[in-house]
Length: 129
Image (cartoon, rainbow, N blue to C red; front, side, top):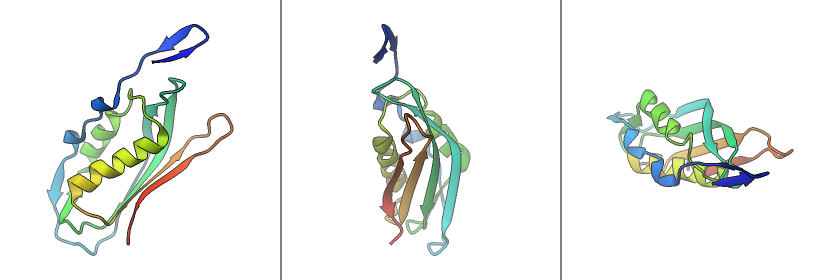
């Protein structure tokens, strides 16, 4: 919960992020580069209670023989919507959940958050090496 001028904004904790929403399918093409992008990611700043809106880019090679189904990825992202989580932690959480689901180390997650208070934040987790 965040407070501002006598008002409070309630939000959920990280236990409400649901990686079980990620549907994975077999894909035997470990050399194929896959990039998925959206500008519709949102979570809640746990300091202010205000929404954090971000562009997200996911890049990976399916070296674990798996791909993520995109509709399920959208539902997974929606599970962040009312969760109080810092931008850096959200980026790391997306990376960790996808790395586990896809069984690959060839994964990079980049978030580019909308400007707030004059600051623009870009977070990058992982690598394609």
